[in-house]
Image (cartoon, rainbow, N blue to C red):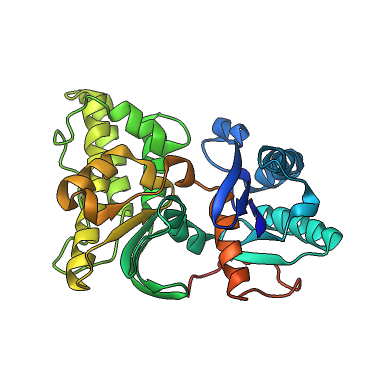
Length: 329
């Protein structure tokens, strides 16, 4: 079975080919046009997908050393995401599927991130705790099996990735904020500033990052006048506040649910400070991260999950449309 996966939920235009559970090509094009605006502009993102999608899909097919007639199905992100960008990918996928006479499988973007971990390790054992952490979501899931998910906790306001992006803007570091903060924090003292860590009570599995962002904003207003600390120390301290919350919630969820394994999914999973912190607390055998190329939005997780859904006959007809607020449950 050969499945083409298409991902256009936000500002990455991505396509990948999965053959019998193996990713044989993956192409991601990051839209650089948004940097000048300090964040994603939805209308521009939709237009960029229209420009890039045909080339990205063509490149994925060429790299897989196949042609379109070899495809068994097309999988495409249905949501959550930006409505316009989702529609661009869905319309492309439906047109391709109808032209080739093959199924088109809608994929939940969040579920795709969870199952990106199976690409690296198909033998990954269930159940496990999943920390799904990105620019739009910060959630803890108990994953019992395919399609069997229990939401344990989520953010009440900003997602962790959003806290990175907004923090980077306050700090004058540009977009995307996560990589910018991680790079700028190298060599800084993570304990220099005692930024708040919210909702850290016993057995609390919910998140809140809006207070941290506000604290940074006020701190930087004072910093303009005093400049008592190096900016590198401030950046490292801000990053550490986010990381500390994520690590505490993961370990608490594992203890409460008596689960020995945790996987991390989403763009923030690429953060080396988070990776090192979790490995330090849990050890290598109890924590798993997807490959760096599969942390941010990608077509590989869509094609992989699409193949699995076809095998289990869990997909709809062509009547589906975009669902910007699609939930996992």
